[in-house]
Amino acid sequence: SYFLSGVKTESFRDVIFPLGSSYKSQQPASSSQPTVRDIAIEAGIPTASKRDSVGICFIGKRNFGGFMSQYMPEPPRPGNFVDVDTGKVVGRHDGSLYYTVGQGARISGVGTRYFVCDKGSGDDSNTVFVCDGTHHPALFSDELAVDFSSFNWIGLGRSGRELNHVPRPLREGKTIDAWARTRHLQPLVRCTVRWDRDGEKLRMKFHRAIRAITPGQIACLYAGKEGLICLGGGPIESRGKSYFECGMDLALPSIHPSGHNDLSLS
Picture (cartoon, one colour):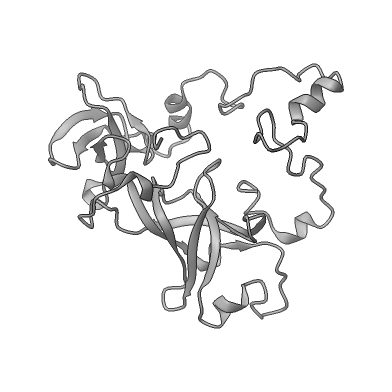
C-alpha cells in the first residue's frame, strides 16, 4: 500500500489483490495462514524458492552512481563531508546527489562510522553533513510537511469542486489521529495530522522520534485500529527540526524502529 498510495482512486475500482494479508516467507508465530512461498511450493511454481531480488532490477549489476550520472543535466560536482558536531571537513565525495539522509557514508581513511544526516542548501548545496552513529539526534525528527495539493487521498471520493476527498475533521479545521510511515517496511507509527490552510500544507506530528525523514520520499497515512486502511500519500516537502537542532537528547524507548527487522533498538 505504501507504493500504491499515489495511485488515483479511479484506478482501483476493478482491482483485486489476491494475496491480501498473506506474508511472503515469514509471519508471526500466532498466525497459521500459509505464506506466499508455501503456496508457491505446493503449486509447483519453479521460482518458489528463488532468492529475493532486493536491488533495482532494471539497473542490474551496474554501479548505481554511474547509472544515475547518465541522466543528470550536468555532471555531479565533488564536495565535502562535514561532521555536524564539529563543523570540520572529514572527507570528500563525488556529488551530493548520490547520497540520501540515513545511509552510511563510506569515507576513506576515517575510522568513525558516519551516517548522512543532512545536505546543504544555497551556496552550500553540495555539502553533505554526516554524524557519528546511527542513533545520533541529527538523524531524528518528529514532524514533517507535505504540500496539500500533492497529497493523493484514496477512497474518500471527490464531488465537483467540494473537498469530499479530504477527511471531514480536517475540512473543519480540526486534527485527526492516524497511522503513518515514511519509508517502505517501516512499522506504522501514530501521528496527529492537521491541514495548515495558510501555507496549504498537510502537517504530521509523530508520537515517536522518526529516523531519516527525507524530502522527496513518500509520507503515507493509514486509518483504522491497526492502520489497515490506506488513506493516501504524498511526497515529503520538508521535515521539522532534528533533535540535534533542538538541542534534545534521544532515549532509545522514544525511537521508532526504521524497519520490521531493526535490531538496533533491542
